[in-house]
Amino acid sequence: MKLTSKSQVTVPQHIRAAAGIQPHSEVEFSINDRGEVVLKKLASVSPIRAALARVAGSANAPEFKGMTTDDYLRFVRGE
Image (cartoon, rainbow, N blue to C red; front, side):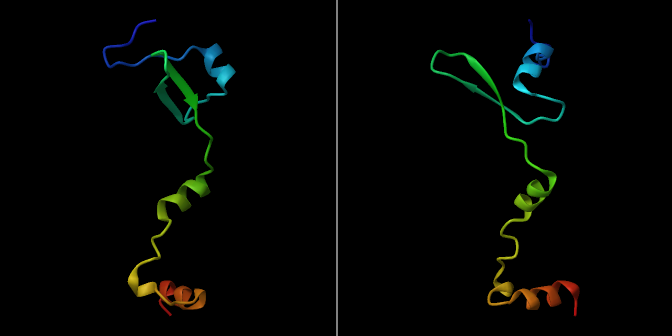
C-alpha cells in the first residue's frame, strides 16, 4: 500500500470492520515501542456531550460569581 501525494492512505475495509471504524469515527495514530504505527478508534462522543465540552466553564466569568441558577436564567433571558 502506498501513500498518496498528500500522505493519505485508505484503511482497508476488513481493518475498518474489525476495529469498528465507520465514516466520521474519531481515530488516533501513535507509534509503539517497536516503531510501528498504531491506529486506534477513540470512544465516540455524543453530539450533546461534545457541545457541552465546548462550553464547559464559560459561565465562570466574574460577573456570574455568586449568582444562583435563577439569577443566571433571568440574566440570560434578559428579564
